[in-house]
Length: 496
Image (tube, rainbow, N blue to C red; front, side):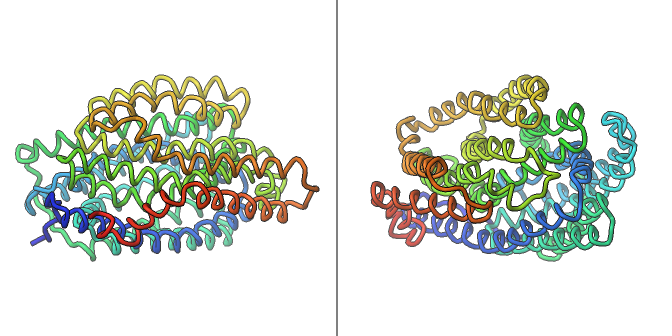
């Protein structure tokens, strides 16, 4: 018998208990994720020295197609288990079998599509890569349901530990294989080794039997999954259109540079955001019928997210030049500008994920689907046009269009949960104003300070920016920061 999920009882005591779950979940996720992230960052720098931009570019071409198949083969089953808390053990076993079947279908599809994908990119080396990477779909099909059950039951400590272990295994395997001269195959095989280890460990941690899927019994669950899937498919297509355009029209080397810029700009913020986004779907689903609590969690989480992602994203943009000069050789020339633009866009991306989760929670998935369709119609064409200016042009298209496309759905979510726009803006004001002061100080220092070597300049800019950011926060927004810290450190008293 599977453990029953924690429900929100609608009282102050229940609010405090849920707050503690949120804080402890983020804390355990942070410990595990950052441990793995240190290894991941180190491995990326080592791989950049062991491999060439062409190797990264070739691997990036394969992940475009396989990532799409992953989205389709998962079919939103994980989200359905996470959000639909009334599922019986028998229905979960049926969905587990369905997940495995879809994973097998993804493997077969990747094998069939290997040659067309290679033809699209005019690169015959892609054919065996795509075929081999397809094995990962079968492995993920074993993992989806056990992992989702653990998340539904708020086992964040266990889930985050296993995911961190997967990151470490992938990093170590990739570096070892690259050192052995496997070139781009080291990236492919490293991911497969990590996926196999994760699937085995998740199944051991949350064993779930299989049952023959009876589609008639799963009609409601599959309807929900299908709607989630449609939104994810459009999101995936427009989110990866920049890589497709860079690979098709700019070539392997340019794609490798752009891919590295994307990773450096987004990985730090994605790792930070995942600490919260791994926890928040369960929290939002627990209060989905309480608009006041939805508003409170959206406000608190937005303020907390902005306090972290604003200085990190804007900080990466400010130190892009010395960072690239200190960490990379001349093969990576042209990396700084797309890194700067993508880091700024990453800040916006992190904030939009939160309101997107609320949109799913309140079942406004039809609008989310059309939002994805509009983005899919606008962004790829824009990337193609902007590619005449190289990777920097594609990054600039992201930064210009992403806010315009995500403004209307944000305002719609705020209206549906009766949250004034001014309340939302007040949530991001401390981080926004402190980051503006940080940027002004770092830019001014760059104009008037004497020239330094790349590494000392990187350290000096980072120290100055951190000092100004923290100084502004505690000088002008100490009360707001204390309220937020009280929720993090003493959730029971804050909730009361």
